[in-house]
Length: 64
Image 1 (cartoon, rainbow, N blue to C red):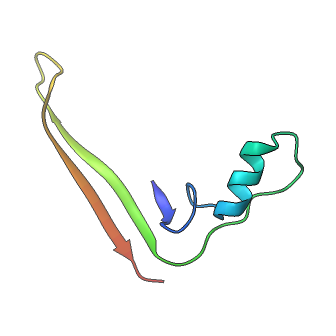
Image 2 (cartoon, rainbow, N blue to C red):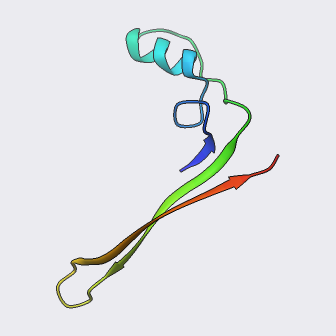
C-alpha cells in the first residue's frame, strides 16, 4: 500500500468516513497529503508446503 499515513488508504479521512457512513453520497474522494509511506510485507515461503517461513514488515517513508 502507498499513500499518506494521515489518511484512510491514501484518501482524506473525513471524505472516506463520510463515504462509509453515507454510501449513496456523491462526494468524491480526495487524496490525503503529507507523510507519504510505502507499506508492505515480505514473505519467505516453503516451496513444498506453501507455508510461510518468515514474514517481515516493510515500511519506507517517502519524502515529497
